[in-house]
Length: 239
Ligand code: NDP
Image (cartoon, rainbow, N blue to C red; front, top):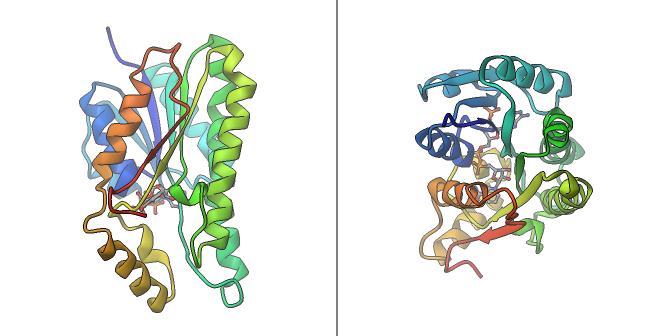
């Protein structure tokens, strides 16, 4: 039996890229979204549509989904992986950085849900996986706005899950601890970056993106009547 369409945001690097490879290996056609479309294309995955979409733009998210559905059929899974982490002290960080994180990490997730949920409810099936963070369950120094966005992802995912569970649609929160990716590189304070790197070193080793892709696949591959609501997955050495 042919596999169903999976949409992955933020597939141009890190966790999203590893997740795209895992779903592709499992035989799914894919719609991959990011701003750096050339990095999506460079993955050269079979039966894959790559679209340059900024997740803060609902209209372009929706039209990419429509285009992929016309080619591959209805979306069975959306993985909202696109995210931005800009660490900073509350008194010195620019409000523009707070806004950038809320736009991508919160509005981007809502835009993704909005782009697929009506169809999923109508056909009574489908899965939405939202990537939150351990920083969506507890706080850390210099993480005020980032933690705010990730606590929001936990809350929104659970709320939407309650709203659509009667339509047989699953909502899953994946909350990773520290994973080696490009995420930290966007923080503008060198001091905060080196402090974070010390925190990483203290753990002995951190996770790799494939670890998170494995957790996503585990949740998705359960029978549709089994909803893995939340997975928290972190390095063993992370306090
Ligand atoms: P990366 O920086 O490697 O990947 C982030 C991805 O998000 C990129 O593909 C980037 O693509 C995409 N992205 C960012 N902004 C936008 C936008 N406006 N529109 C579309 N895509 C966008 O980081 P990770 O893989 O680590 O992050 C993936 C998710 O995992 C994030 O939600 C992050 O918060 C979460 N996470 C990561 C942890 C870690 O330790 N790495 C820990 C806990 C959670 P492009 O720039 O091409 O648009």
